[in-house]
Length: 237
Image (cartoon, rainbow, N blue to C red; front, top):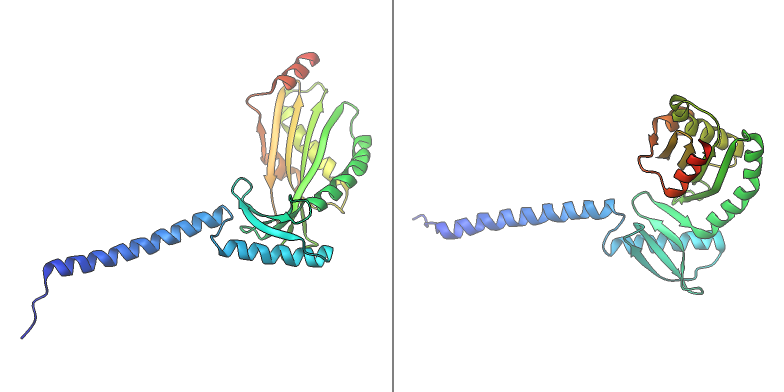
């Protein structure tokens, strides 16, 4: 004799199955969102610790890590140095990269010297303000340095609007060329100003070298200029 299945029991059985499926999907979605932010609960910290520990051991022959914490503002795991109680090395889980503050200081010490050659070979009507390089190292190949050039350019030249639109890309391309092959600049943050207004370039390409076409296509008009920039432009008129 066949047993009759309680319809209430059958309903809750099906409901539980859908709840489990929904929960699994929610976990997958949350994991994906966390990963996009460079964060994985528990596992992320362990991965970052191992990566930073290996980098410190191979680069500095030491390991002074006190602990590692995730910083949601930077999206990176930051190692707290045991001696200074400030972080010097951080790890990005999303793109497997290491940021070393000491290495960035070395880059910029050299940049101050090399950029004098850039200034000397550029038109005299240009003023370059506060060149700076940030960036990171490949987490699997420390010799692969990804550098990002941050630069403001002020141009006193008389230009048409059409000419102004191209100058930011032209001068940035030339500056990168003059810095030479020992730099590996794969990204820029450029602010360019002349009497027609301002333009900005912000692009990061990890694989292909930057060129004029890439920079020109990434050039955008600055809609709202700061007070200092407006004062500078008014003096040119």
